[in-house]
Length: 344
Image (cartoon, rainbow, N blue to C red; front, side, top):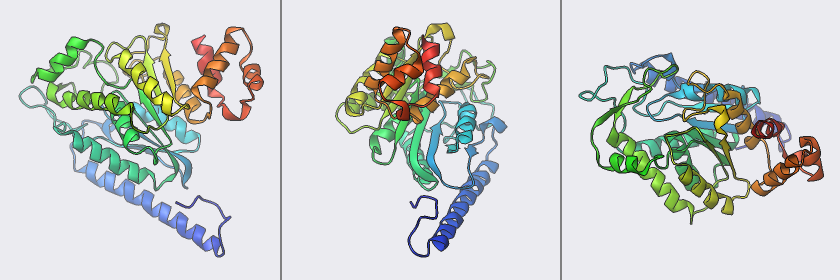
């Protein structure tokens, strides 16, 4: 894809105008197709609609995010707005079978996909769309959306610049739960179904979640030997849903191949639970999650360089002096100071 600008070959202004025209057409087509499709669906509410934050021109970075299981694009609205304000294009599409209005229960479960390929094809299609909107592609997701993100990153490492995995669902926090997920066929209702900010489904058939458990285990098996995309893996001490051991195991494998991968676990003092992306879902420190994402997306330092900065801070050296001493001024995003200060 030609980068926007006028430093082109002869006839550059004509080529530039044609390029911008194609971009505008692409944007219009995306919006119209999604709007047309979602107008035919009886969506639960406006929060379930796909969210797009699009600049009037192609951008240096394009961000594609996948929401969590039984949830909807509202989960990435705050981060999407923040990255749009930084000059990026942001796509948060509604996943297949999600966000549909209905009187769902055990006898009439919501229409969640029964085959993981539905999600995989969906992710591939949106990755291809994202490639038409700018240069570097950033992907991310929450929980099962992070599992899907990890799978896509593992299978398209040359296409994706970075991947952000927020509380990835690779397995449950308690091993017995994984066994139950593997064998039980019943319908389950979320314990927090009536919590504030829950605009998605209140329950689901266990086999629909099993798809992502199997995908998470596959991801762990493949990550040890396949080429990976640089990843930020985000965890929280207060998250009682997913396995922190598996999160750390995935990071250990990824960072060996991609030194610019990071792992960050929010301390329990922040009381950040599994649904960590928005304040309306219970995270009072939503801005810290956004700052961490921006720090990673806009920094070029390795995991080892990040540890060196932290080592300086332990000795009470100021962040700016630490970065300067390591000659990392041009490689560090300003949001990193906020994250490290909060972690102190």
